[in-house]
Image (cartoon, rainbow, N blue to C red; front, side, top):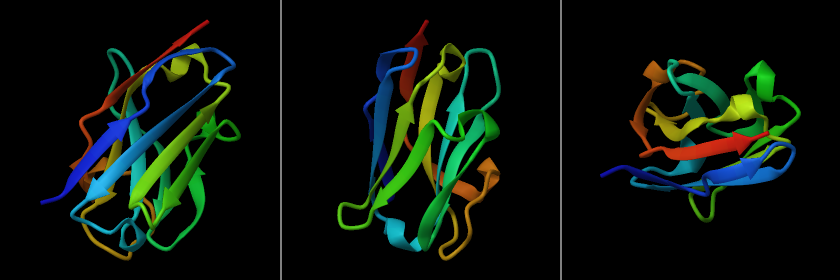
Length: 126
């Protein structure tokens, strides 16, 4: 059974930092593209960051480029999202997700992901 468990959400000051983690079981992160999505209050879920199955650099939505960093630890089978200089508009429930098929490039399309974490609330105060 595939499970994703997020941790690290909470309250952050604008300009501070926050780190989200996602522990994956049932799939090997080194074989799958992974993603972070978020759902701001009253809005649709949106892509935040992704990584190809074979690692390398992360891919980001424009509004978080240069502030957020996606990383993967194959030994621990985890992924992280380092959020530096967060802004109030980054306030959302954040989800990690794993793609439904292995050995694929990252995707910003939620349909390409079939297992999701439970979500972790991030609130950024000004």
